[in-house]
Image 1 (cartoon, rainbow, N blue to C red):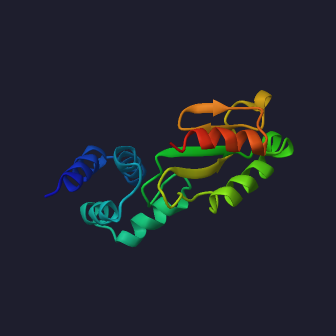
Image 2 (cartoon, rainbow, N blue to C red):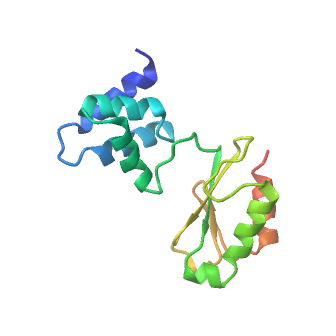
Length: 153
């Protein structure tokens, strides 16, 4: 039994007795590995006596679960109404063009996973983006790209 498998089984066991156990198990797996590996879906299904498709359907309903390993840096661009009005869509367009990627994807080199979010709680500095746990505000496409280039090393 590999360490990934044993860790997944520990997470399942921890939450197995709860009524609504699937979401806490999925959160636990993603917290541990950064995403939900296919192996985890199969193990969860086996242990809960469900079909893998049922586990996948539940997980894929929620946008915060990932099925691929995330990039080294998670970049979240706020696209709430305030940020959108102040230019977030131009920043998103520039990121997608410069990195040849769509929001929700990870760059081929594995350096960045890009996501849009609805609100980071910094409307007074909009538009904003968060890289890992650091907030950057008052952005325009050029400023956003300069900041991202600093993370490429």
